[in-house]
Image (cartoon, rainbow, N blue to C red; front, side):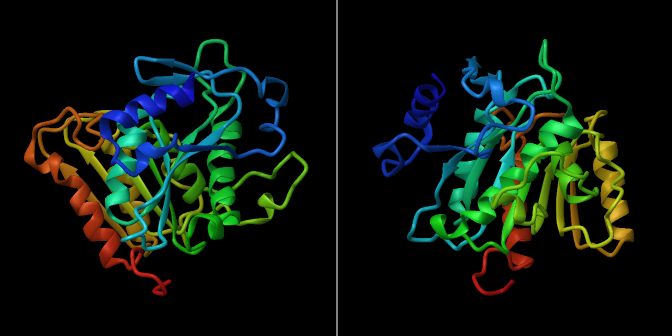
Length: 286
């Protein structure tokens, strides 16, 4: 059901080249996620473009057009309050936006700790999925024409919390048997936080944290304060960081799918400016 649904969405939004085949979807854990091995076969549920019942965390891969692919990669963690995943507006559509920048994108479906009946933890399981996604992309970088030293982690809302947990906080000791992917670093080379929730902020390991781009709206009582707090913390730690706070804007502006403010229509351009200025889109610069 999930793959058919994604293909239907792509019929609306993708370029003709993408329509030749369903997007590639790969599980990130070789034998099932730790603690969820018995539920690997439980199907995901898609309701009104939202995804839940994720027991086999995976990546949906959107390759940049070879004519302008530059080797940069971004793993996207959609939001949804850890109850569901806003997979279209905070997954597929940002992926297509980043594809235009020449970036190959991997959209993560992670375990949901606040879904009804869930036995998962945000800090233990969802964050482990985000770290594993970075490791998986780094381990398979050559397969996708990706530079293993130019891999970013981007998150919206609850997904932004995972970004901070991974990029700005220490990794807990792993309790599972390590494999070849686990030998890769889980540290993203750069981080992008879009109206991030408060979990993981302030960071407990910001010294040497990856360069960061942060954005939120002035009306967002949930997520403007942690955005500003993390900016100040990273700046004080001498981490390269850029912050954009947009006037008259509340939570959930994603990539302007439902917002007519001109500034929000163009906020992905500010991200492109930052990625360009910091050298993440230039092969051989890192």
